[in-house]
Image 1 (tube, rainbow, N blue to C red):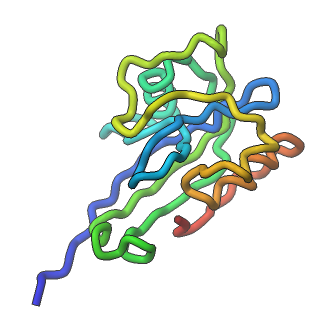
Image 2: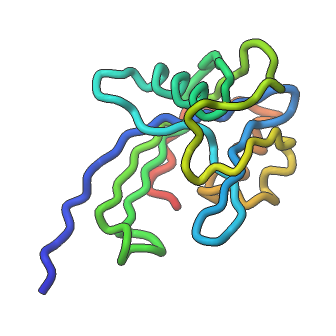
Length: 159
C-alpha cells in the first residue's frame, strides 16, 4: 500500500487586470489544450499578498499595476478534482485581486514569463465566459466586472 501524500499548501496572488472593458489574460498551452490563465503566482515568505501580485504581474506581463481590492479567495485541493491521482499533493490558496494598469496598458512583455505562457491578450470582459479560462469557476464572475464590483468572497475549493 502506498503511503498517503501530505499536501503542501502554496499561497499565491492572481490579478484581474481591468482596463477599458477588457481583462488581461495569459494565453497558454496546458495538457495539450489552448487556454487562458490570470497573471500572478506564488507568494514569497514574508511578502504581503498585494506586493506578491504586483511583483508577479510585472514579471509576467511587464505592467506595473495598482491593486484596487481583493475580489475572491480560491482554494484548489487536487485530491478533490479531476486529476486526483497526480495532484493529491496539491493544495493552493489564491488571493485574486482587482488591479488597474499604471502607464501604457499596451506595453506588454514580462521578463519572467510563466513556463506555460505563450502570449498575453486583452480580452473583452463580456467574452470571458466563452473562453477556456482556467479555472472555469472564474469566467462568469470576471465577466460580471463589466457592470458590477462585487464584495470580496470566498469561492471555496473550486477547479
